Length: 232
Image (tube, rainbow, N blue to C red; front, side, top):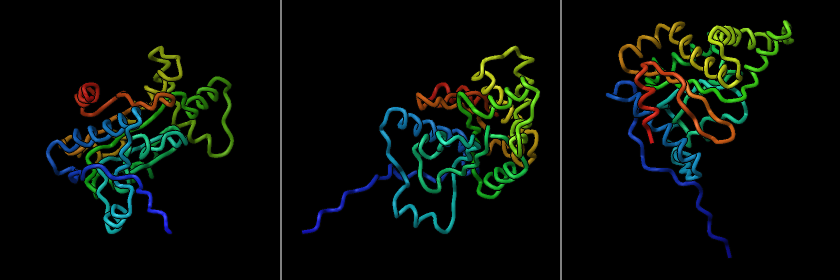
């Protein structure tokens, strides 16, 4: 006698397609992410859009509602942290969320072609890339191979932290997140134009490895920080 099948994770309620052309889409996309993170923190996960039906639905095209430019750290898996599924997030990850031409091109593709209304820079406490850059400066050494490129990308954030009198690692991480937001907008005219038009927003958030929570560090437009703080 065969054993009845065990039901897998069930998706949450169907989400309205969020694109840059809908009024208030950046704020609504951010609310989706914060709600998912709250579910992750409180262990009330829904695992939305992680079944065969969703796989079939997004096979032909994608409409992610947020871009995550995150650190490559193995503990920073965006779909898990924000309780999302297939087709929801357009994720670009590098060590220390460093941003080069390929990263900017990926973000521009999501924002301009896929009409994604939100870009999030996601860093985390105890970041190894920031610590590596700090060590390299302190010892006046250059890491071997291509690790030097990661360090070089983080050093300007260390200089800014030094000017501000910030010495603790997590304070420097916050500065690095904010600087990444700033650098992306300065380097990408396409992204800056979408933000100026109100069709997209860029936020910087820091993830706490032990607690699982994200918190606001920076945003453009700046008033989005208030929305993040006020969100349940």
